[in-house]
Image (cartoon, rainbow, N blue to C red; front, side, top):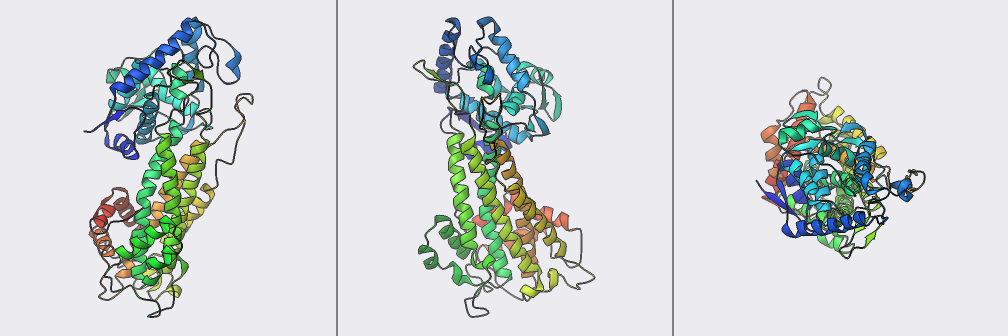
Length: 507
């Protein structure tokens, strides 16, 4: 089992996936421990000298002008957590909870938050011993950090709330006791340090952007399979076409398509069967490529955010404590709205390619890709279902970040809605993957109606992997089960791994 060392500066998307899904353990570096200790010394000095500093010796939000005595600091921090724990909706899956905990621990390890080392180590112990707080999905405005959901994360640390431990949901106190982790009595600044940040939206969005990167490759693979099935024209992918409009994603996609169909006997040249293909085939580089560029932009923003200090106030090494706005989620909100739009477009063009596969008026294949049509409906309703998903994505792709509702008596008068944007992007991604799985399965079905064709270098491997799990549909059967199998090959990485052994794909 791997160990991820945290110092607040070099966490990667791969690290997040390893901790969230593969159970990797987490530890602080010695340097991070020293920075955390020094930051805490500054906070202790502020409290002992009765200095007035926001969030340390004052209330929060609109109560920032109310000074809190040293004796009341512990009560203040506890009250902060329990009063802010007002989330609602479905609970986040444990994988996302683990990502949230990891990102908060990494941010705190930078040494700008004033938390005690022992409190930070408690959070890390919970992660390593798999005490997963129950965190509702909804309730964050994404501006003064993800206050509500992060408060739910903290509840078990103080013996409150609920947590999942060894597959069972129990009280937070019981989970901590069973895991052998002592409870924490929060002191000055600690409650705020734990909940003032963008880690919920960033955790959800980081997982979405990681999966979106893989989906980009799967989109190219799927499009290449449809190109094979419809005897598409290779000329549209000629590198000279894309060099004169040199968007990086466009060039990469054209290169991927040519590599996937290399040595195919089905692919044609312009003029052999038709002069040109419809846009959904001909413009794959332009459409997929634009999504590649967008998703890579979001990935860059996420990589910055997962190694940032998003607390308030920020405690600097020289003793300065500055109240700023690093908790505001706008950089992530805009990015995750962009992510959702980019992924939705992958599904949009996929569903239209699916239509070209199943609609006999647009091809030379049997209607709905089935023998004995009429008795059998074949792939007819798979396109309905895909159309429903892309239509839902169009609603979900409406940007959350253009909205704002003032809160805390207008002290917090502009908010990002970044957590909503992140959650929507993940929903869009899950819908898009199902649409692509549908197209991929239909393309394999269409290929089987072609006589003695040789598939390309990458498409032949794709066909092989699919047919090992999913047979040709001779007559109607329960389709969702077959589609589930195809989607699982995408989710578990089996399909992409097999294809990339033959063809190196770029994103």
